[in-house]
Image 1 (spheres, one colour):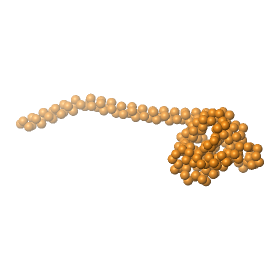
Image 2: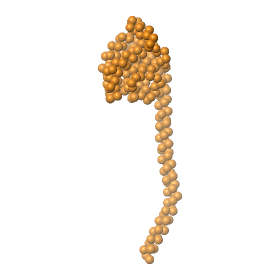
Image 3: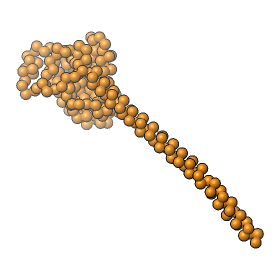
Image 4: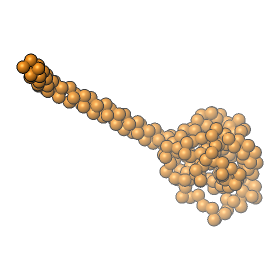
Length: 218
């Protein structure tokens, strides 16, 4: 059974639409929504390994596809057929691109296309019962295969993203510190040069001043 559906822009993780009644009949709904947001954040940082993937999380599985700068994600029971989950996402993708494809890049606020919920709810109902003739036909469709879509654990994926972020932060910190040390080194060299040549400059200045004064007198 489909439990959650969320759509977001990949480049910045901005949520564009979601199923408004998602999670009402589910425990820990907010926890899973937070995981989805963390996944979108990872994707926005380029931590995506494939355009189609399944991620196990507790008794559920996240399935997502990335097409045309947009991530379409759903969460289903583990027993729900993977093939139906991805065909459900394909239906959402096709309709979303048809209705909002030219507005995706200019969307400036979260859930700018919340009206798409109407289509989400209508389509979700079609996919809820796996025993209908329609869904049985889709399961038997040999032209649509999902065997090659990778399945991983969501914590593993999020953990990789966190480690990459830590490496990036460490690299930025080291770069910043190296600049500070370089500036300090230049300051120390400048001070050393001043200490070395200041007496010479002072002596030369005094000599020149005396020579000029003597010339004036005579």
